[in-house]
Each structure stands twice: as C-alpha cells, then as structure tokens.
Length: 260
Image (cartoon, rainbow, N blue to C red):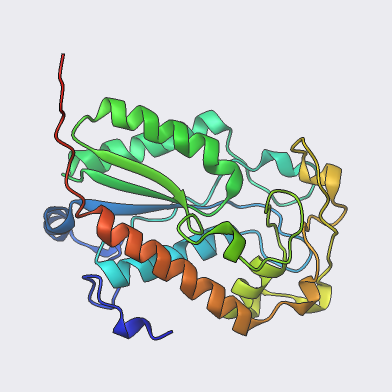
C-alpha cells in the first residue's frame, strides 16, 4: 500500500499539537476543528515486548492518520486501566475513575482552545469502559461538541484481524498480531528469543491476566510473528481509521426534527 497516493486532506506530515506554538494551535483548531487523543497503557506484554506496546502502536496509528487527514494529534496518554494484569511486574495502572477524569480535563482544555471534535483513539482494550463514559459525560457537558471513542482497529473489522486468536473474544495481548506490528514499527524493542505463546481458551468471564497466563501472553504462534505481516496489519489500521476520521470531521451536524 502506498500511503502517498491516498488523498484525505493531509499533507503527508503529521500535525503534532505539542510542537505547535499557541498561535499555530489556534490556527490548527480553526482549520479542521478536531483533534485525535491517543490513549495507551504502560503494562506488561510478556517476556518479549516492552511495557509501552499499547502506547507506541496507538500513537503510531494516530500520527499516520494525522499525516493523511491533517487532524492534529495531542500527546499520547500513556497510562491506562491496567490493574487487571495482576502480579506481573512493571505495570503502571490508573483506576477507571482516574482515566475518566484525565480525559475530561484534557478535552475541557482543548475545548477552551476552540476544538469541538474529539477522537479518543484507544490502544488498550480495558480502557474501553472509561473512554465510553468520558465520551458520554463530555457530550452532555459540551453540547456544541462531538466526541467518539474508538480503538485503532474499530474501523478495521474484527474478522479481518489476523491475530491467530481462536477464543477470548479476539482479546489480543503480546500475541502474534501485536508482536508482528512491533516488529514492523520498533524491531529493536522486540526480544524474539524470549517469545512464548499461550493457548487462548473460551470463557464467559473476564479474568486477571495472571489468572489465565503464566507468561503474560494471550495467543498462539507468537514465534511466527514477522515484520511483513505487521506492516500489512498496521497500514490497514491506519487507512481504515483515516478514512473514517476524514469523513467524520466533515460530517454535517444533525438538524433536530423536534425540540420540546
């Protein structure tokens, strides 16, 4: 896939909010009236991947989406709802209530700068509940704004994700998918000589990771992960998300048909 041939309104260079001056941020706010807020995590990812996998992948997707669409990206929130990893070392977790409050404060600040459209781009599945609550609260608080929480694979249908996962409702953690994407994005951070697999199993309940995996890995065939596969998966995540965001920021506001 040649991203340079995709025309969704961007310049090919990501717009990094934190690197703008305050007058430039005002101009960026006026241009598209939207920002992407990447939300990741700092948590164990098995013996072969670094703690910041979710933040690194989510930020990389956000920046490529920005390059394609022109929508600015604010600094990644690198802590998430991760306490359910249990006793594995290294994880730094926020309570769900804390993440909700942090996202509210970030959006309130950006709203004061003139932004009215907010894409909460999630890189860690257990952030979902908090981000959905944040979006609901912010839609009520700022009636002139639009807020959407989505994962970087949300616009990339689940059945198309080749994560070598059979069960676990497509739960992916330090598995074939994430390892392949990391081999594409940050190969120097991947210790393939330490890669292990864990057979995913079917279950009704969600468990702490240390209750279902002795290594912190969920998924099989991790040793088969490769950069070529990671590149293909990453680029489809970027393109499907970019197309959705490009359309979203230009979506007409609804006209109420009835107001009491």
